[in-house]
Image 1 (spheres, one colour):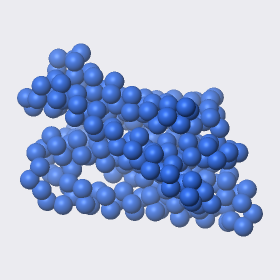
Image 2: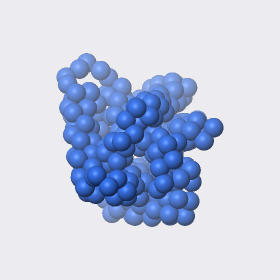
Image 3: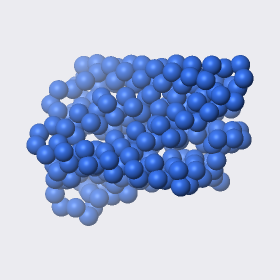
Length: 259
């Protein structure tokens, strides 16, 4: 039951965010968008440290045959390289950009915007999956509370992402229903990635420290490559910095208090 709830909580955050298309008349104001992007960045940075890298280091320390820093280092770099590869292959378009990335395609602008959000939802799903798998396997430094704290933190930062996808689609002429569905679908990859990760870890438990760090590296890639640059475009970039601080502190409190 805890596993199903942990996998679904982040997706619910995306659904609620996408549902803003039914409540708001206009697009999200640039200042609020910057704050939300910064907030999402802060949550992901804190989650990478407290929920993924620190447990990776602690687990490697408990394995007497492992160099404490090696799994975290290898896993982190592998996660960065994995997202770099996906970023180079999947056609997508960042918010506030007119230059598509990835392989050339004839996809519509709004479709590539959905792909961009979907792309960086993959590591979030992996992060939730790897922590839940560690909890299932009885890893001493991963408790039910810490796993749920990570799921809740990811859900909180998924809320603005759902709105950031659905609102522009409505403004571009799509119906509210279709815009909502597109925003929701951008988050469905998270529970799917989480389930796949859990199934893999049950087979490869000895490399769990590497996988924890792998998820952290993938999430940090998204923050550095996408979220922060998008939040810093144009005027009032300091608003995004405030968002980072708020998101980081909230996720840190959740992990420490609940974990």
